[in-house]
Image (cartoon, rainbow, N blue to C red; front, side, top):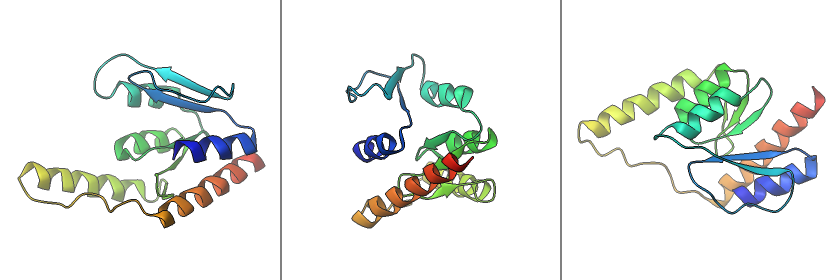
Length: 137
């Protein structure tokens, strides 16, 4: 989804910050930056949660990170375009935790559905809507 994010961000003239535990290739566009964080397993999540501000837009599949960002007042989208909000993040966390417990007990939970072209389309539509909404603020 990164190329699509870069393209949409360029159209709206907004910056993109990628946060990772190691270096990765990013476009040479000055509006795209990479923040490499050192540390343990959740170091990137911790950096994002510490830096996120109200009305930032965060894109993540990580439900606990999404909850932290929603609590900070950010807008959060999953990679399939699903918005995480104050109204639905509790259910998303509960489902995630239940499935983690089931996997820990040795049960097969199946995992996420395969990413399909309609997911990409839904994500791009949600990203566009979120950025339009934020521009109006």
